[in-house]
Length: 296
Image (cartoon, rainbow, N blue to C red):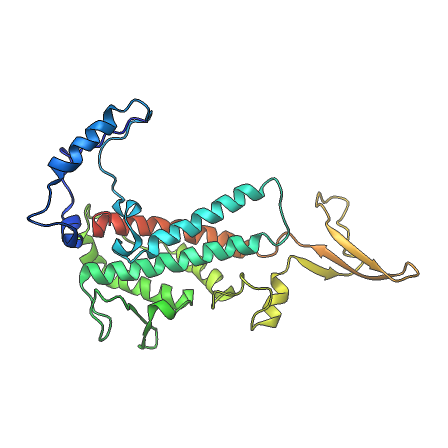
């Protein structure tokens, strides 16, 4: 792979200098005298086989989490979403019953992290304090619809987090557009509201898809893809192409006792909404990082 990094023709974004001032010094070595000669060596190395030019716009992807403009929330969200992607691809050939539960959990957690990332970024970029906490605090807060401030890191209710994320974005959209790198459109598509409601209503505490048993017994029954059915509804109609996965329990005399049938529509609406919301919020996350924080 041949790596060519053209640092000379791509000046560092001003946000890099502002947010990472602790790593530079007037008495320290300069990039041109230390880094560029080494990059030239790498560029001449014929063992590397791929050409890379320019500067990565997503600088945070190559930095420690604690150096990220959102303290690492967005990057970890991307990791959870990527894990869901890989689990789906790995699961295509060997579909396991209940495998949608960890997939939805990964997506739901990614959604939560993307929203928290956005809240932190908007507060820091616009220098908005959190109640009594300053905008650059390591203890960010969440404003609830009741007007109360709560610790953001201890809140897992997606509906509450989304409410404040949307409030921040919509009420400050002109200010955000004015300070963005390219003056991009930050309008929130209407359909995102519906997807968040579906996911948030099913799993308000971030435990529904992690555990078989939660505080909501009725909801726990609904999440299982195997349902008890009558003998009459066990088999599909002749016109149906449905594949039946079921177990029939008999007594010692061979009489029917009960049947359990797999319902492949279970959790499908929630999974579909989780994928769509995670994809859209991932895009919002990348946009905020690049447009507001110089890639950090």
